[in-house]
Amino acid sequence: MAIQWFPGHMHLTKKAISERIKEIDVVIELLDARLPGSSANPMLAELTSRRPALKVINKQDLADPARTALWLAHYNALPNTRAIELDASETAPARRLIQAARELAPLRGGMVKPMRVLICGIPNVGKSTLINTLTGKRAAKTGDEAGITKAEQRISLADDFYLYDTPGMLWPRIIVAKSGYNLAASGAIGRNAFDEEEVALELLDYLLQNYPALLQARYKVELTDGITDEQLLEAIGRKRGAVLPRGKVNLQKAAEIVIHEFRAATLGRITLETPEEFAQWLAAGQLIDAERQVKKDGLENQRLIRLKKIPRPPRAAS
Image 1 (cartoon, rainbow, N blue to C red):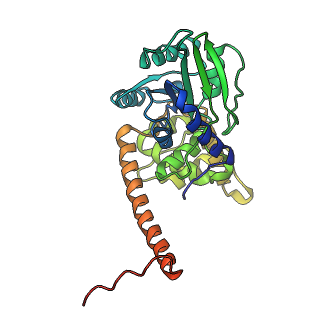
Image 2 (image 1 turned 45 degrees about the vertical axis):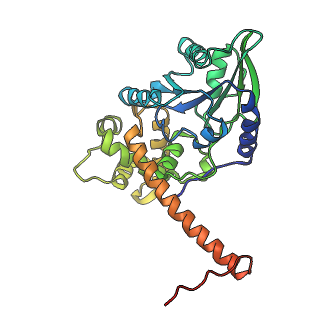
C-alpha cells in the first residue's frame, strides 16, 4: 500500500515558505522522536535555501531514549545543523531552542537586526503545543490530529526574536514505503488516507522484532516462536473483547486499539526507526523511484512520438 496525503492547504504552505525564506535567519524543523527520519520533510532542504537548521526532536518522552541519542548524534554530525531533544509541553527545555537558534545565527539580534526564525514540521508533530509553551499563552491551536494549523502566523518571543509558524506540511509523494506506515501510525496523516488494519499489522511486525517485551507486558499474550503480525492482532482483539457475533475477531477495532495505544505511549517508549534503518529504507525507495521515473519518461516519449511532437529515434543498424 502506498500512503499519500497532501491536502490543498499544503500547496499554499509550500508557496508561503518559498516566499518567507528570503528573510529568514534560522529554520527550526520539529521532528517526531518516534520517527525522526520519516518525519523530516525532504522538501525543506530545497525550500529553505541551505539556511542554518535546528532539528528539534520533539515528543522525546514518548520515544526510546537510546534511539533518541542515536538520532541526535546523526543530526549533529550534519553541516550547519544543530539538534536538541525536548518535550514541547515542558517550559524549561522548550526555551533552549531560542538559545540554540541564536547560536546558529550569532550575527543576528538586537532591534536593528532582529532574529527571524521559521518553524516547520509535519502535521501533528507538536508544533502548536511548543509555540504555546514558548509564549505562555494559547497563540496556536492544538489537537491530536493532522492539519490543525491552516495559515502562517508571526509570533514575537522577545523584542528581537520573531517566530514564523507555518501549517504542518508533508511532501507530495512519499517514496519510502515504511515511512508512510510510520507517519500513519504516529497521526501525521489524515485517517481517511490509510487503512488502520494494514498500518497496525506493519506496526506490530516491527514491534515483534524490536520491542517484544513491551507487547507481552501490555497485551498479556504469548509470543510463541514464529507468531505473525496477523495472529498477534487477532490475539490482541480477543484479549480486549473486540469480538463479533459467532466469535470472529473485529480486526478493525483491534487495529484501532493498537494504533491508539502506540500514539498514547501506553505501550511504552518506542522509536520505529534507527538512522541506519532509515538510510536503508531511503536508498531502496530512491532506487524504486528512479526506476519508476525512467518508465514514466519512456511512456511520455512514446506519447509524444505518436503525436509527432518529437521525432522517432532512428532504427539501430542491423
